[in-house]
Image 1: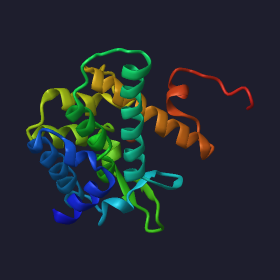
Image 2: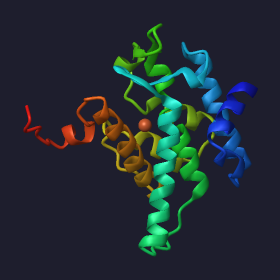
Image 3: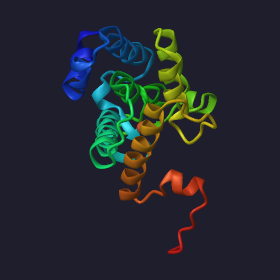
Image 4: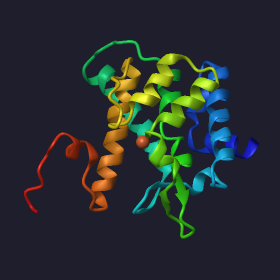
Length: 196
Ligand SMILES: [Fe+2]
């Protein structure tokens, strides 16, 4: 537990400033329990995506939280939209959104990853939501985790969930594009690549 907690706190100092200390502890506990069930030894080794060598899952997760916080900044500072944002919910949801990838991706033995059998059985987001719910997290956070992927037909139920959705897609799709892959949201809405 201690190593996972230290690794997470080093990358996500926001964990230390969350007001709900029980929620912060539950975030760490979910990562720990998922790591124990997975084939990975160290959360820092987990790759971002099959066929994309280099970026890590933890790095992607850090970028998603950065994007999410930037969206909140723009809402408040640029648009002067003084809408309530639950900071603890946003931080917890961002840090947990892809924790299920420890179980749907498996190490390929060469520093990358392959799809695990679980990926054929469970929709992306399922395990993140499942473990969060088991840990006693509120439905608003469980919903964020379920709804954050384009595979899900469920609409995010909160502003924090909408922010997570776009923060995640921004980092994941831009990063994939730099590796020559088609951004999944653009593909899903039927954008045509006219260079091919
Ligand atoms: Fe993600």
